[in-house]
Structures are given as C-alpha cells and as structure tokens.
Length: 253
Image (cartoon, rainbow, N blue to C red; front, side, top):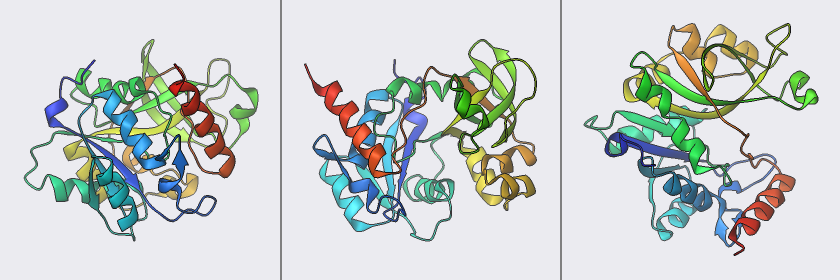
C-alpha cells in the first residue's frame, strides 16, 4: 500500500565507496545490477516516497542515474549516514517542502518493501514521535549475548510497537521476557533530522558506539515498529554471496 504521505516523503539511500571488508561495496554486482541499484529497487517497490541516493563517489552516481534513479553527490568526509542524508535533503529540498525522511541503508539489497513501509507507521500514528525505526524479536540464543547485535529496550505500546527507552550492545533488559534486535532503518520528521544532526555526539552514544542514543539523551522520542525478520546487511564477501542467492531465487518464475 502506498505511503499516505508519499508526496511529502524522501527516501534517502546513503552510499559510500570506502569499505574495509568489502571495497567498492555499492557497486558490487547482485543478480545483474549494482547493489545500490538493488536497494533503490526495493525502495521503489515499497512505494514510500521520492527516492534519492546520497553518493560520495562519481561512479556510484553514474550507476544510479544510469538505472533511472535520482542521485546527489555528498561530501566524502561525513562520519555517519545521518549526516550524509541531511546534506542530501538540503540539496534536493532547500525550501523544506518535504515533511518526512526515510533512511534506507545502502547495503540492504534484500530488504522487504513492507519493512520500509512499516518504518513510517509510528510517525503517522503519533504526532509526538520524532523518529521511527524497526525491531524484531530475538529467537537465536547466541544473539542475545552478542555485542554486535544491538538490542532495543522499550515500553510496549501495542502488539506491534514499542517506545524506545534505550539501545545497547549488552544483553538487556534483565529477567524473563523477549529481547529485541534493533534494525538500523530510520524514518524522521524533517525537523527531527535537522535537530539530530545539529547535536554533538553524546556520552552514551560514544560509550556504546550507537548514534541513536544521541537522540534519546536529547529527549527526542523514538518508536519502533516490530517486524518479522532482520534484513541481510551486506558487509562481507560471504554476505554478498547470500544476497546474490536470495535475489536470484526471487527472480525465478
């Protein structure tokens, strides 16, 4: 279903060429297309808003525009994806006509379009929500203690949504009950994104190496929609092979 705020929403996909474990990652071939184009295709299938890739290299920009998508060049010096997408927002919407920004990471070529749509629901349903994100219940016991799996500690709002109270790499919360894996896809109100990037790194953000804690420490509200699965993030050659297998299988009649 089309996002009801489609005409007021930007879907920004940050893409940077440098990658320690997978150099040139945005242009890695997956099922006949560069990975960044596959991500844009998933965003198009979500029908959530105007799609723009925020690139840091001419080769990325060329690949994206050759596939028929919009792209904007951004500084190669940004420290985070949120800074990159905010630069892109300023370039493509300097008059502030757009009210919402969805940040879809450029290494999620197999993300389900429904997940992108789900990220907007908390913003539509509650005017006091500044930022929306996604989460999924952890079913793998190893993930509960893995510091690379970011957990969200939240207060339930419904069967499919929670208000974020904290994000951590530790096993939390303590005691009986489900734990939730945070998925790093964000939807912002335009004003909330502007406020967020204006803030300096916070104490807990630096301690946990989790940028979203900056928003919570500043008193911003983050709500998380609960979805069914964690999208595959492509960070290594092994991840790339998994993504190729998934999209090849989807393409079969």
